[in-house]
Image (tube, rainbow, N blue to C red; front, side, top):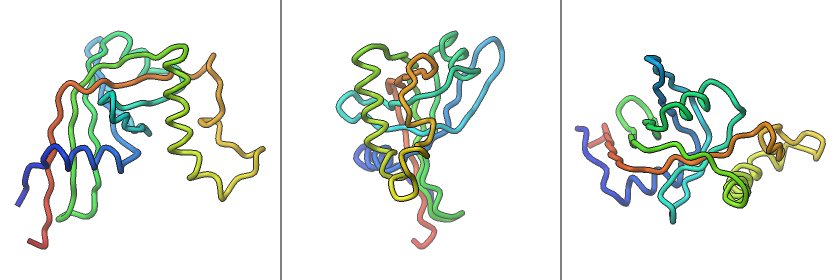
Length: 149
């Protein structure tokens, strides 16, 4: 049976997950793409970084977005949260602090497999080409199912 996640369960899902799908809509077109994120607990927002492209242009045009985060498990056991929020481009110190959060979260995933010359491009600081942004959460809901019960 499908049940609602309570607030603490939603918070745990957002903290433990690193990938989501962000949906944006502008000029009559809807676009959904996978993204990596960090949940910034004190500010109740997702922090992200991206190269300039379609998603960034659409969110600049219409900052209202929908994001889906899940722990898919299998067909009968899963957790999912849907949030609605607003795109906010970060600059200066706020962008550097957000980048630090992203590096802290994702760099350990690459540590064992890389030498300095193999640093993934998404972890290199290239502010002239990267867009650092946050999705400020306005509203959120979550569901789960455990087929064993």
